[in-house]
Length: 245
Image (cartoon, rainbow, N blue to C red; front, side, top):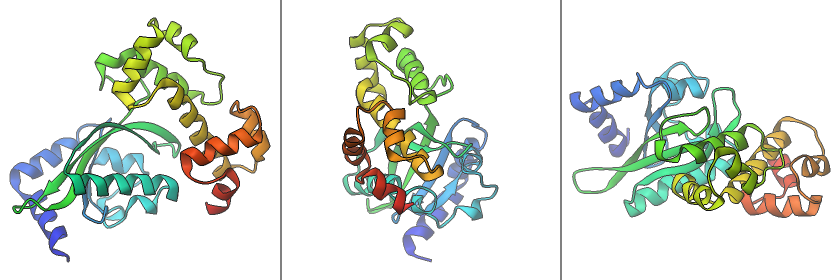
């Protein structure tokens, strides 16, 4: 076994650290993970196993995000790990699209930190993920934005307007924009666009619906605009994406 993996496994077996890992097994709404320097999972808690439809650690140990997500999403996750280990800067409350327990793509808040050895060399990543939807209390200072995220995530094809969403949750557009910037590091308008694109990507994977029909379904003025925005978010045209999955 590579030295870095052995260091991680030894670290996890330290009594205090092991108790901390055990503690995360009793947090049903929070996924906890440890990865090595190749972004392979070394340890996860029960909540994350359940969310991924798994029952035992052996089913995920040694795998990466490429083993369960489309390449476009997995590439972003693995690149995030690489940058974190390279810079040493933690990633806090970062918005990521991940699978929920029903196998749907949903917005999650992820915080992760580098794991370093005695010489300060990064040997892995440790992190937690929580769903933005469902009225979580993870960000009490952003409750209005969180309600808007829930509204958008549950109906990405609806013709959402930022002003109307702000009125619905009882705050101004400026306040909503400020809360979004703090919570998901993007504007409400960008969140709406990305939610539509990810929902359309799920339809491309799971249905035979035409690209033109999906463009109309998700509120784009025409197929060309849909294709342009899809490529800006996922790096591929809708047609290329459908052929790649």
